[in-house]
Amino acid sequence: MPVVESKYIPPYIFRNGHFSTIYPNLLRKVTGIHQTRERVELQDGDFIDIDWSYGSDTKSVKKVAVLIHGLEGNAQRQYITGLARHLNNNHWDVAAVNLRNCSGEVNRLYRSYNAGVSDDLSSIIEHIIEKDYDNISICGFSLGGNITLKYLGERTTPAQIKSAVAVSVPCDLYDSLTEINKPKNFIYQQRFIKSLKEKLYERQTVFPNEISKSDINACKSLIDIDNLYTSKAHGYADAIDYYKKCSSKQFLNGIQIPTLIINAKNDTFLGNACYPIKEARENSKLFLETPDFGGHVGFYLFGGTYYNELKTVAFLQKW
Image (cartoon, rainbow, N blue to C red; front, top):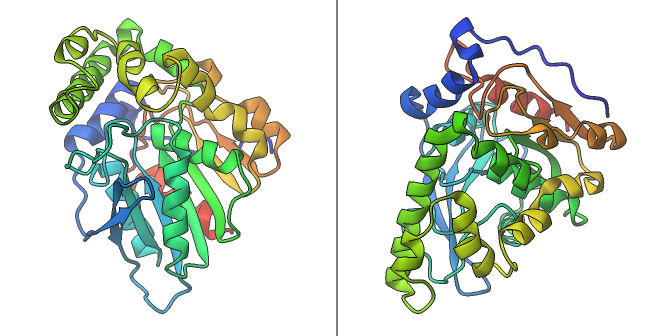
């Protein structure tokens, strides 16, 4: 499917990629949504917490959107609650996933989450199918978008899954890492490193035989963390092996349900390889929209509902 023409034109100040990225994280407040937590027990003995919110019309067809957050996010981030509110207002139930170790409690196992944990997403989908939903859609943001696309492209999905949307997706993980490492992204990079190292110190307390404080102290970059922990804890040889095997771009040709990717051209976290134009043109089920503006998950519009939220609901309603 050819690249979709974008009509997103934000207020002038939001045409700056950094401003549109930072503003919602610091200043956006989403109200009018109530979440109820459910703990899902996994076959390996660990758990994942889902924060549910429900549609405004309980008599409508049972349909649910599964939302997956980005790196160091959770189900309370404004980009999750903003989309959940808009979905609820349009008669969708929402299952907002907290990936392992992201719900405020250290998980039971040494492993955690990463950009390729499609096995966990598969377990979540199986759990939701048991609730008799006959229309399931998946919406992932950033790292969660990569998980979504990988899941959809590497397998034949259950018939209940009808559509998907992925926003601000690092389809090529190494390309995105290279971009984040540039001086223009120094502040973001340092915030990610600080947050990830804090999580590792928590895990070190629980799993002292698996990782040492000195090893964590020595990490000065994201790739250091992925070499030390992310790759090893999840069965990859090293960070490069992890990036290579988990990048969703290689799985896009296998997607068999209508799927929309929204990646802004001024997303400061994405390099050229993260815009899968060729793959979209070769797959009739894959739609790619590349607005000039929006930064990283920052598609501001007046009125409280963001552009990607309007576009997501409109896209999901088609199928």
